[in-house]
Image (cartoon, rainbow, N blue to C red; front, side):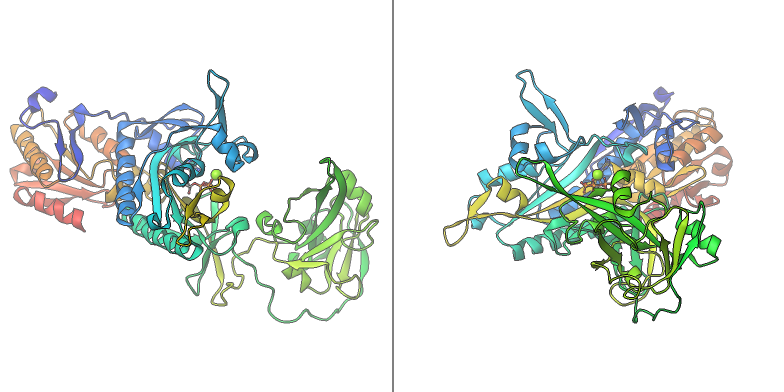
Amino acid sequence: MAGKWAQTPSAVWNPSRRCLQMKASQFLISTLKEAPADAEVLSHQLMTRAGMIKKLGAGIYTYMPMGLRVIRKVEAIVREEMNRAGAIECVMPVIQPGELWTESGRFQTMGPELLRVRDRHERDFVVQPTSEEAVTDIARQDLRSYKQLPKNLYQIQTKFRDERRPRFGLMRGREFIMKDAYSFDRDEASAKLSYQKMAAAYRAIFDRFGLTYRAVAADSGAIGGDLSEEFQVIAATGEDAIVYSTGSDYAANMEKAEALAPAGARPAPGQPMTKTPTPGKSTCADVAELLALPLTRTVKSLVLATEELNDAGEVAKVQIWLLLLRGDHDMNEVKVGKVSGLDQGFRFASVPEIIDHFGTRPGYLGPIGLKKPVKIVADREVAAMADWVCGANEEDFHITGVNWGRDLPEPDLVADIRNVVAGDAAPDGRGQLAIERGIEIGHIFYLGTKYSRAMDATFLDDDGKPKPFEMGCYGIGITRLPAAAIEQNHDERGIIWPDAIAPFTVVICPVGMDRSEGVKAAAEGLYAELMQAGVDVILDDRGERPGAMFADWELIGVPHRVTIGDKGLKDGQLEYQHRRDTAATKVPAGEIAAFVKGRLAA
Ligand code: ATP
Ligand code: MG
């Protein structure tokens, strides 16, 4: 078929757009009717069916030509904005020496996500999951003076993480492409400026992708401060819960979003404390139902343990903790990990430990009548409750009408240890919290001197003294982004790409081109004209029947389509249809190129 179409080149390098236009017969289009059985989410199903990715192993995919075009466009946008923000591109090795990772401690401390391999000399190597070590090694060699700072080095490179549950195609792969950037500064103030520069660059990048997203405050772990944000593409299927205020621009992820203490003082006790039989009712929901009380009057007990080690590294002492949460609330592990005494690590208590301290099995636990001392941490909400219900530390019994101060001492600690829920007051005092789902496609983080100190990476400051670099790190999931874009933009027929990252922006679909010289000439003419204008266009010269041809392009998700047929041409008309349009628009043949270009600019 392609031979007949030899007047115009089938693949043309267009220097002005730095892209390759294409005739479909020369390209690899491998659409599928059925999605693979293991594809749980739509983006995975659609990327596979559209021939964009092909699975080679668990969490390991080939980027097929159609998918690679999207990835390259994502990379190009990221590269342009990173360069504009003053970052400098380099590429660090995928396989990195283990010694470097021993210096930072991550060779030992990082779990099985870090893939460790040995070479023929039995030397340890790792496959990079990120590159803090490698980039800090560059800095300590090549950035010697404060005069060379600040610097921001970035790469767009393959990563490997041996994820516990690789799934959802490119969304959570084991091998994937990340843009990772690392800033080096002289002091904290300057590092924070570098961070803000990246925050602005990320907004510019995500604006260009044409997706709905939110920048949310994230937990910055032990380093402290508020200098960590995640960039979340909003999608109902997202793995992350993101929290925002309906009354302000407050937004945070679930770990970071603060639940305030309830307004107003704790009500005075109104009921006597009463032991109540609750046979077989071991959950708060069951107890509330049995006693005809709202779930919000119940309190649930979670038992944790912390261990003190002796010099030999053996467990010398175990401390048992009782965490109290309102029956309808969920514990947040990150928040619990910040409670004084639990911040060095904790585990759930074992059943024997629980029986030893409470005298009964989980299901009927509470803070009253303990057998041995237990540290009690009440969630802010629980600390403000009166007349509540908890387990009686006796199988098949609960206690109602419990009150702090009267029936038991005030808790040892009061802390925010729960997930916020929709309707909670916003922590900034403006509006209420709402929750939606998101897909994390970027993360920026102020690191401080964590890596530079561990790896002895210093520069000479203007006082002639060596100082450790202040660092920041900034990631974007290049290959996760197309999957996130699809979760947000699809319909029952397939993908709907935003123009900026579509594999092709325009597809020309000639109907009956093998029968009609007129159709062929019009298609060739438009193809040449759009190419000339730098439009990323593909001409479907495969000779498919119209139904199959349209179905392919709707599945692949090319946003703009021009259909050329004999019938329309007789009246001098072609048809234009955006992927989101429900019907085609007739456009005079002579105006079609301008019309399409107008739609692209829109
Ligand atoms: P997640 O919580 O999703 O595991 P992360 O916190 O481990 O992400 P970072 O280490 O901050 O991620 O990596 C930077 C970016 O790389 C993430 O924002 C995400 O877009 C992307 N990314 C991380 N893990 C994967 C993966 N397994 N597959 C594809 N992209 C990933
Ligand atoms: Mg991860």
